[in-house]
Length: 266
Image (tube, rainbow, N blue to C red; front, side):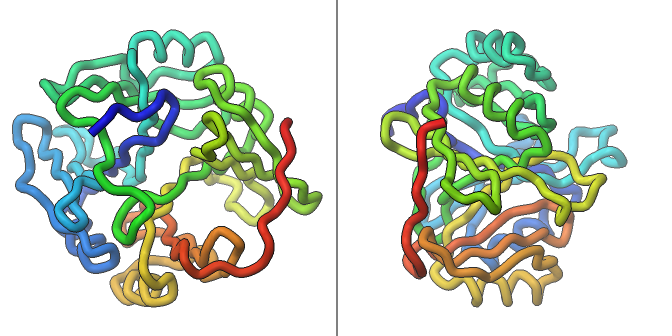
């Protein structure tokens, strides 16, 4: 597998107090299978779709079980995490975990952008990242839901070589970040429909064959439906919160409706 271009979403993982419960939930909803937990790496457990690595789940670090909050974390590719860390600091981001080596697999950091959304950066070694994308069971898209869109946008374009485009829609503040001509990330302003205590976050979208069927299966297993299912020019999608509190979305990219919106450079 070739390396991901810098700034490309390349991996996603989530921490769960009940790892076995998370495995059962996502195994049912997304069809994932799992490896044995890597005890030397804190119980890190990779998820597979059709035999290809697509994500991972991990328990809280010992002693942090009470403070642990389940959430999906998106990682952006970098050829040099130390250099990216300096860009993050210079752009006003907050380092949560300084660059560290993860055995032969690669190097990582965790940070928070000025709007408050947590993200990771990954410099691949033996583990490059997603082995499957844009197919059922795999990562398809991600959006930063931000309470400070101006600060978030300035941060992202400072750290990565993104071109920002804004949707020509007066009813919402939505931006897309491209690498070349390839869209890699969206950004949505959090409005009054979000609970006031809810911080900015990055929502990861996983592709499914049938959005409505995936939503029914997820809610039957205890997930909470936050939005949708809704058809759009990009696919039919829905936003969910899993039984342990992690937000995620599902999307059927083959079921589309309506014309593509216009985007302009911003």
